[in-house]
Amino acid sequence: MRKAVFVLTVLGILTAGTVFARQTYNYINSKSLLEILDTGNSAQLVDIQKKK
Image 1 (cartoon, helix red, strand yellow):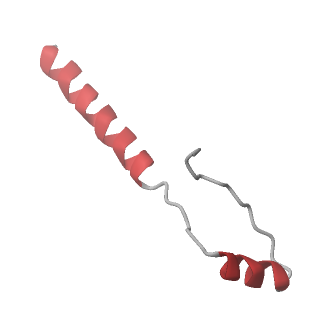
Image 2 (cartoon, rainbow, N blue to C red; image 1 turned 90 degrees about the horizontal axis):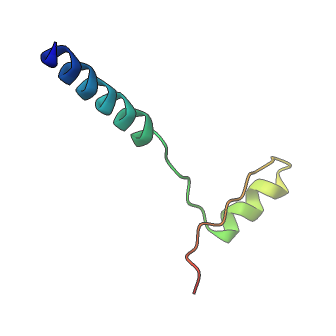
């Protein structure tokens, strides 16, 4: 029984790690953003800077 719980726990951790590892960010500069917006495409902008 302990082995089954251990195996399920490890599988859960590995699955969660895989899900979080797939989250990526597309960092672009201001020039690239302007090009995207000028072509009429939409964009979602998220500011992730640290507060000073």
